[in-house]
Image (cartoon, rainbow, N blue to C red; front, side, top):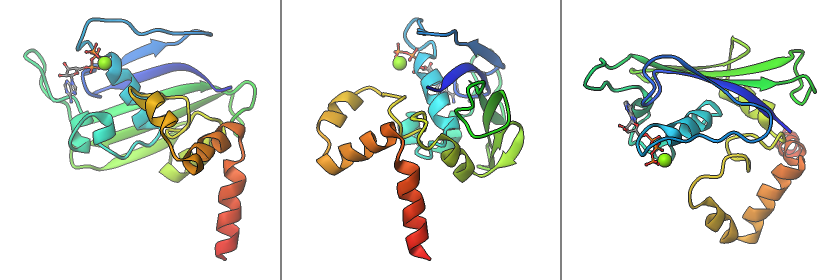
Amino acid sequence: PVFLKSITIQGFKSFADKVKLELGQGLSVVVGPNGSGKSNVADAIRWVLGEQSAKNLRGSKMEDVIFSGSSVRRPVGMAEVSLFFDNSTGIFPLEYQEVIITRRVYRDGEGQYFINRSSCRLKDIHELFMDTGAGKEGFSIIGQGRVEEILNLRSEERRTLIEEASGITKYRMRKREALKR
Ligand code: ATP
Ligand code: MG
């Protein structure tokens, strides 16, 4: 399975200053009072993995993910989040021991994605995560209400989830692309 080792968050939602969250092997739990930013951490992960819907990030427009200031801090102009994944097992088809996925967005809406600090397309990130089960649409992030939603899915939709979990999505996508030509 994919191992997320650490996360750096800067200028994203309530995280004005750069913070690094280290996740150990096994189970990690985020605790804190209401409004302290726990769900913002989950939003940050979803965002880096390509979430395009501001609503899914509990905002009304994408700019809402950028720190908007507080009584003691001025707003910032850019949000940047990086996810550091272990790749010692080669789960990602890249020649790196560690895979770093970064997303950045500015107030004018300009945004960038990076894999190991090299600029890339969102599509490259999707392909990297396809079938690892850790993609945005994968089963690794289960939002509030999602369990009930999955139980209520139509059978074809539930099948799509199972296909991603079992690792055959990439072949289905390739077949679709091949048939287009
Ligand atoms: P709960 O226990 O109630 O679920 P939580 O720890 O999950 O709380 P979050 O929802 O992660 O809390 O954080 C909410 C806080 O994040 C609010 O105080 C909100 O003002 C702040 N916040 C969200 N977006 C921004 C932003 N763009 N700039 C500054 N602060 C923000
Ligand atoms: Mg919350």
